[in-house]
Image (cartoon, rainbow, N blue to C red):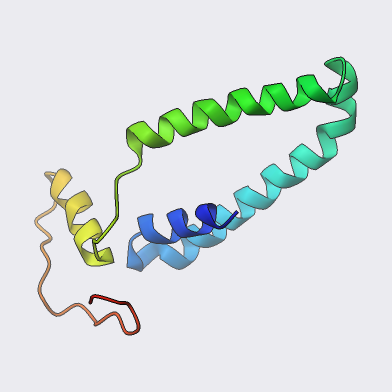
Length: 110
């Protein structure tokens, strides 16, 4: 669904977003292909399609728990604010927003 693309686009800083998104797309496609290729052999090995889907239901539940625990809330925050929040957590960097960041054209509320 669209959540995968929105989450990845919001979390990567502007300077690495293009490369990070290409890596995210590659990983997404590899994962989708793996699921498609293993469906028949694994569903037969697990005793039917329902068990195969229960395995993925467990994986999805674990992923949802990890996302709730580790993915930051980005509502009403600009990309620059998110970047600064992550840079501020890194004590070795003195980078601060300069106020000269480019305007985000077309984004409501900015």
